Length: 183
Image (cartoon, rainbow, N blue to C red; front, side, top):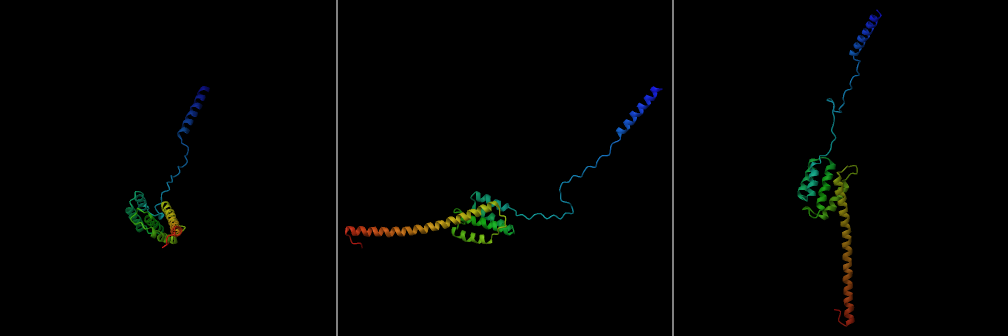
């Protein structure tokens, strides 16, 4: 009977063990996946940013030396965007076009006046497009060069007057030395 008892005990252990395997332990709940999508009840306001489409097209046309087309794109950008930064960017781009000698709207004298108005209206807190800032730097360099050119032209004119007087003095001295009448 010993064997029989041992067999019954081992059989009951095997059956008890199998029964516990079939039972599954409680699993932790799976956390919900968060996709950071706007909630249906969210009243989100998108940031107001300028649409640079016409501005970028203007840059491309300018790069391709299509000055009139570029001017039209800059003017469209100015009309379509109703914020002061976009208006300022378009003004700077158009003034830049008037600085280029090959441009049909070239007017070197008007550049100084236009850029002076731009500098008065420009606000330091405005974040201008990178290419517009480069145009602004070019305009400032152009105006500096124009001022230096004006100074050089005045100095050249003065040197020409002095040279003329010296040539006249040399001619008179030569005539006096040779005994000719200085008239």
